[in-house]
Image 1: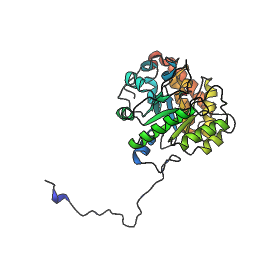
Image 2: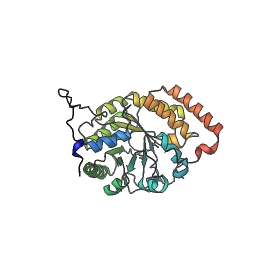
Image 3: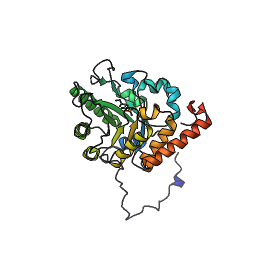
Image 4: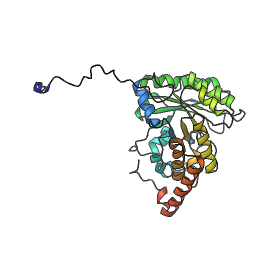
Amino acid sequence: MPDLDDVQDGKNYHIGVPMQSNAFFLKGSNSLDWGMKNRLARVFNPATAKTVMLAVDHGYFQGPTTGLERIDISIVPLVPYADALMITRGALRTSIPAEMSKPVVLRSTGGQSILKELSNELVAVDIEDAVRLNASAMAVQVYIGGPHEHQSIGNLVKVVDAGNRQGIPTLAVTGVGKELARDAKYLGLATRICAEMGAHFVKTYFCEKAFARVAAACPVPLVIAGGKKLPELEALKMAYEAIDQGAAGVDMGRNIFQGDAPIAMIQAVRAVVHDREKPDKAYELYLSLKKDAARTGPSAAVPNRSRS
Ligand code: 5RP
């Protein structure tokens, strides 16, 4: 029985004060549904409109990649420092504790290996499984100019449509074949096609010349991959340049987990991305955190499940 005595006339109607209506903080995302925006706001930090995603999905086509041989040992300690984890469902279920609260960007295409043509992918996760895994986004590889370009765009369209039905955003990842130049002209073409086909955010590579044009012409947030392992200062400079020229963050893998001090490196990357720290300063931070970690010993490499 409802307690009718408690139903009183309210007073705080704020008559004359217009209903608040704020623009969503990510570019190109204002017209999305609430669930979609809420998931994007888990992947991107609303305070900075940026993200540091940790990419550990390399095993889906290249097996036990250096640094990812044991995800439970090498990656779990890094999770607390990432804004989101890009990972396959197999690695997630087997190696990441479900208690962690970071958003998952679920690798959702695959079906080839480094022994074969990489662009020959298919959709490799059912949308129901993405929901079951509480994915905050799904990631699809798109090979513009590759032998299976048409098929990979088809995969993107399928995942975007399935995700739109459930409110799960799609990250399009521009896979670049060895024969293609990673220049602004190519990356501009690839990223724009991904956005026009409905991707909610796009991952691509940084290029030295005219990256600002790539970022400007992509109507949704753009994050950059780290690519092959570089010396730490170079990787930090690349992240800085990318952010400076319009990237909304990084989705970095090897330049974090293949280094000597991954926990120090991810914190230095965060300083560049979220605090706009200059690369030299971020590198100093890296060196000092690395020194601290060396002092505290190998315990830093052991998963500490209470942290995530
Ligand atoms: C595979 C991917 C990888 O997740 C991504 O490229 C890895 O990041 P990094 O290049 O920084 O190791 O999307 O194509």
